[in-house]
Length: 243
Image (tube, rainbow, N blue to C red; front, side):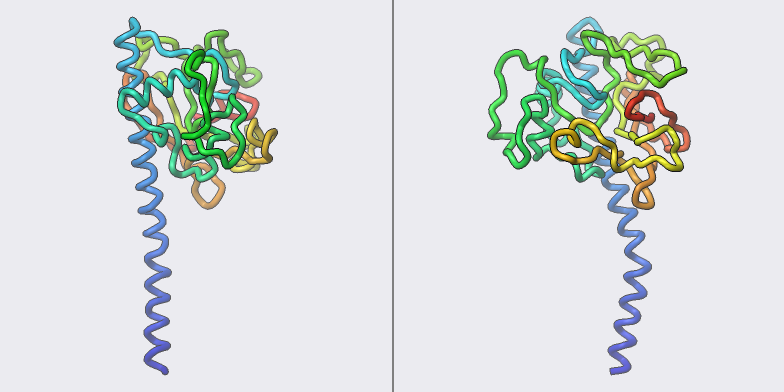
């Protein structure tokens, strides 16, 4: 009995030592998948620009920065992506299996199969999906929202940016309920999914349960960087979008 208790104690000790390392390795793996998603998006957007005089696709509809048109997702999928390309694996509340997000503008019900939910064959630029990333491309009508007291942002319309290596094109979703990073919630943000189904929106990469860790940034020139949260700032509100 004593020997059995010793063995159990040793196993418990090893588990206590290994579990944090395993969790960290799992999180690192998700970051790599997320980075690869943005890399594929970057390749597709570069290809799109090369076929359209360096112009980028502009949403005809949508509200938040992670709304993107069916037409744009069609192109990315046709040039190497798939549904998973549009969702960060660190956020379990948003997956490509959710028709209510994948076909958001059609008001798809929760539980519907995205592959079986009928989509329009024409006018696809007028329908949009809710993804897990912020898209910095402008809209056809022009984006207008920005934090009070900050200069209006120049949204991206072309690959011929003045500073392509420092101009963000697509970023991980990092958002909160207020501009105060110490007191804001990064996991219970009320948006369109809350208004319809009481489902909170949340930040992609978290540490210590509910604090943001940072995010992957895809730049107009196609390169990727990881930006720690302490180097981020509120860029758009409301709600409060960080990058």
